[in-house]
Length: 275
Image 1 (cartoon, helix red, strand yellow):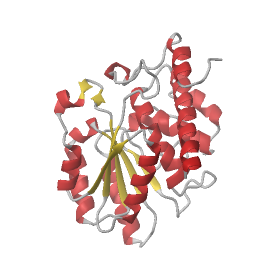
Image 2: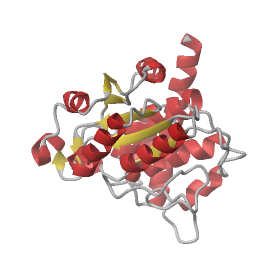
Image 3: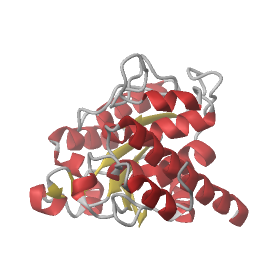
């Protein structure tokens, strides 16, 4: 398992490089939240989920709903690396004629399950998927990735209540709790703490972890599979802009991309060199 964890850590590092390069080329997109969530997406795509890049609609696949759709660059670099579409397509992020929209588009991008980005709605869609799979007696699982600022939306809690009511133990909710949103600190904009206590009160099995600790993410997702009769919520404490020191913990990098001057410095932080 140590070797597996090391490989996942290295994969996450390389995907961070792809995120930074992709966003720099695009000159548009969300840097901070993409870098904070990529460790969880790495474990999902390269360790936990059943999926087939050659057959994106494979009936036996697990489903991923990126409810915090502004972190689409993180999902796109993982999908490209897995082989859902050519890596060259990353150069067309947010460009006319390309299929990589600013937020995930299930109609245009292979591997994207649903259109997301209108915050608060993704968990409801994930609950619907999990309920449908449960009624079909399917063993497939659904993973919903939320942001902590997104928890300010009331629809999130309606969906959590429904998930517990229908005993959806095939649903795992991952909260990318980096503490920042576009307007500043989540606690100051509209405090959502204690996140874990809230999800417990709504009937979820709750795990609280370091969202950049690959081994902890693996262990949490493994435990979630063993829980019966209720959904699992993983509160993952993360750092916005993780991996690039001068991006970290800065709300100003929520929707700002690396400049020409910042690119080589960012790549150096990630152990890469600029072309």
